[in-house]
Image (tube, rainbow over all chains, first blue to last red):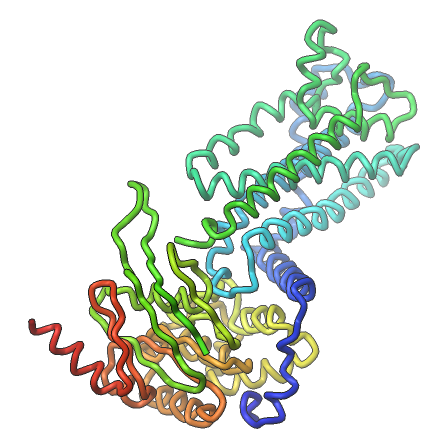
Length: 273
Length: 221
């Protein structure tokens, strides 16, 4: 059965695909491909995806939970950490995974219809998808242990997570271009998330920071997202003044805009050798 | 028709710009013509194919494709090592907009490549010949006006080369081929015209035999 000969086939080939439909089919195909690669990498890769936040949670809980107070600002410490970790992991994983997207998919640029930016955006989308699944598992698990896991303002929690994800995309877009053009910058951006982990108020409430330093602390956009998740989750939680979704959203918008601009500006450099 | 107009190309290295690979290359490839590229190692054959295939851009000059051109097949490019042949084939079908008739295309690719059960094994277990079979099958599953092959037939065995040649014979009334090969027999079998790349310039020959003669003369100079 030869598909590629005979005049009949020549007539009905779809040479008039619009750019949008090409981009859409590329995204779909890339998403499936990335998902398969992620889930089939190593033995039971999906187990590790689900376990990452859980292991994180248990680690911090064992490390600090016994020494620190068990109740923070009127809420349970484990839920306090869980919300912080989920928020931070979402932003960090989106940024770091999409940063590596161009390098990891190098061979795919053999196909003209695949652009570097496609691989970055698709990775970010996959990261959100995997995050939803693992967060759902974590919350369900905590719920089974008797914790009160239903957020009192579901919409606000969702919005805060979405904003953290968008900030991750923005950083991922910028880092992906930067690490291709200046390889050393990849190492720097990789180190960035180490200190940020401790500066994002994951395992301590920001209210423990002396008021004089809070304005510095609030420069970190992730704090705003994580604290908004918490105020949406727990009605009795008290955050520090100055926490605003607007700051995080503005950060996300600016970084996404800058990242897209970089991708447009260096489109040929990213593919060319 | 493919128009290459005054194309210059040099690569960027860690120490600034490299030397010119192509310097003022111009030619026009008419439709349905099979063209072979010859030249010594490093003459810029693969570079020229990448420029024609549109996966790299010339430093100066213009490459215009007035037809559907395949991606350059060769050296395992475009195949993900950790995925199986089938998964790779599915991906390529999808990005070419063949979601609906995916199974038909897959069957064609599977039949052409004749990989047997290896079709469902990861690419990293493939020999280079098996990769060539898959790549050739992949590109033939779509209706291109011009197919680009970078030494893809070199790794295949005699049976595969015959099959590929027969497939191109069948396509010759509607599609062309641009190929790089160091096998004289392969070039004569597949191609009619020839381009000889020498010191950054391209020389067009209406007969591949003349191109080969000129190329061999330059080797003994």
